Length: 326
Image 1 (cartoon, rainbow, N blue to C red):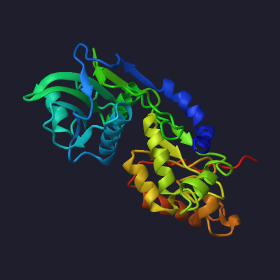
Image 2: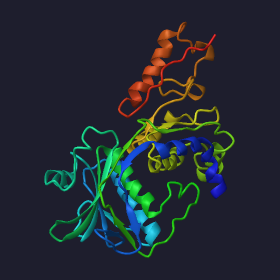
Image 3: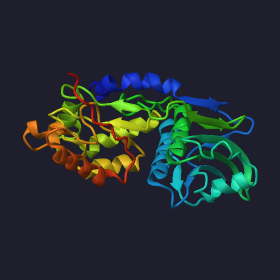
Image 4: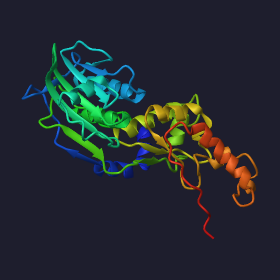
């Protein structure tokens, strides 16, 4: 299984190097097997709490963190929108989560660094923040991706590799997970758009999706892309240039692909010769000689505009048209 999944490394190795330098963080998260000063225990007795109206990405990150606690300790943490547990983990967005806002308003956490900050997060441990609550690990984000990255940072610190699924990386088991944050951890990206371009997929990733992971679809589809989105989030990526070779189904041939990208907070684009979120090999149905902005201006413009209309409600990077060198 490992060798078949690792084919994505061909596209992602450069990104992995970028990830190591793409964030600016202050302070640290300490994880030990026993209680220590101001620590909070992450276990099946603790609960991951999110605002009921939170974006789906926050709910996804909350569920993943709960499962990751189980991957390390053997028992996952419950994920809820309301909790009476004595130990809790709060994941929320400043300005959208009343729990987070209340902590800012009473001075328990500093919200000034999160305001107007792109994909930033702040992690801290608070003792007795509410009656009946002994400790809370607070993951506050400036936006949905910032909060999600904060949750995955905790997962990484407790030992869950971003590659746990793709490369079958099993985390080290801990009998107990005690986390402390001596000083609030603040992180912001140094590179605004970070992601991968799926390239040369014919020999590797396409065949794996077709023959192994998603034989029912027989191609790249939502099942495959969802796993790619999950990996990107854990690597603090936010962008994807999808498969575009002739053998690959165009990304937007299945509307569910774009819906999933939005749900996971992934910004979609298209690569080099495929402007305006189009896949010319798979989507341009006219004579290829008609794909000419000079002689068929109206036809090409209409072709581009159709995609902008259908996907304009999502986050996209619209790559411009490139004139062929002469």
